[in-house]
Image (cartoon, rainbow, N blue to C red):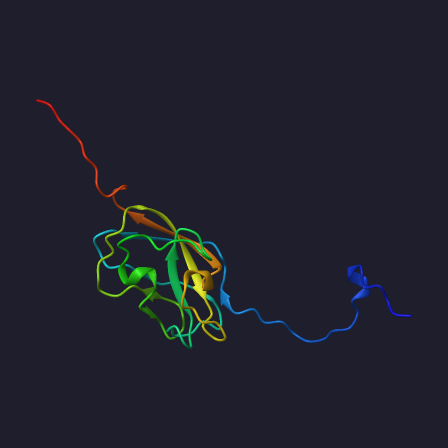
Length: 145
């Protein structure tokens, strides 16, 4: 009769190695300023590669990873336009971000074996993007002299 495999000591046979690809650690904190181009470096992890939606890693800015919304007026509809060849830096290109200020999530998709075509594909939350600017964008105020 076999072992019930209910506790750690009962798993005695080494069956191989599990390699998990993606950014690490999962607590990056980056800042961009609305009205300027947005990009940053210093992203580390395992098997990060140049990104496009068919073969490499891609990053999307969302309010919540895996199904959240893309901030209105965010450059490239929140999808990173370029990832460095090592995955260490990301950029939304030269188009300025004009979204409202706030805290957004940095969401990652592997590309290899995943479509990375809709927000639901970006379920790995690897940190926070602080966007400095007004929120809401349109504010009506009256001053009296």
